[in-house]
Each structure stands twice: as C-alpha cells, then as structure tokens.
Length: 121
Image 1 (cartoon, rainbow, N blue to C red):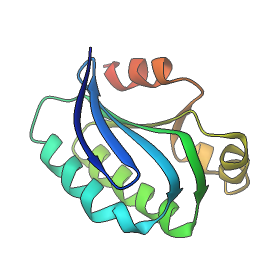
Image 2: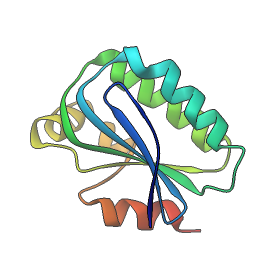
Image 3: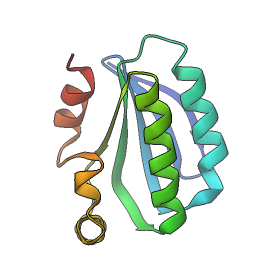
C-alpha cells in the first residue's frame, strides 16, 4: 500500500509497507532541508522502521545536499532507524562513488530492495 503524506518543493513523501519514502526530483540542494528534517523528526515519533530516499528523478546533488544527507543519516540512525538511498541515476551514482559515499550510505538500485532493507530487523 502506498499512502501519500505530503509534498514539498521537489519532495513527495509517502508511506509504503510502513516505510517512509521521499521521492526527490530536480536538484537536491539545501533549500528543502528544514522541511525534510521536520518531517523526519515527526515520523520518528511513530513506528516507521526507516526512510527511503528515491533519487530516480534527481538531476544534481551539490555538497550542501551531501551534507544534508549526512546530517539526516545521523538523526535517523541515532534513533535506531534505517536510512536507505535508492535508484541513483548514473551520474549521481558515479559522483557518490568518487566521494566514497557508497561506504557511508546504504544504497540500493531498486525501490523494492530499499524498502526490504529498511524493514529488515
């Protein structure tokens, strides 16, 4: 079941199988940080096992976007939940590999795999 929870600029928030998904689009930069962080803080009060960031429609991630992901990872994992990045387009995947971010983030090629990992105990 997919339930839409809200839409911010360039971010559609839904729930799938108990996991919160954030479908990103356009440029992933700092302007949505406060809204995303607030949404995650609120969701952490509930039973969700984790969060999946869907990058399929993202065109660009700058250093502020990477910094934001690192801060969100710390917040999510500090609350004993999982944060998974999924469906990175090839240019963004390559950039993450160059920065060795595949060693920092849990990254999957498919949304189904990401949800499965987020739900795993």
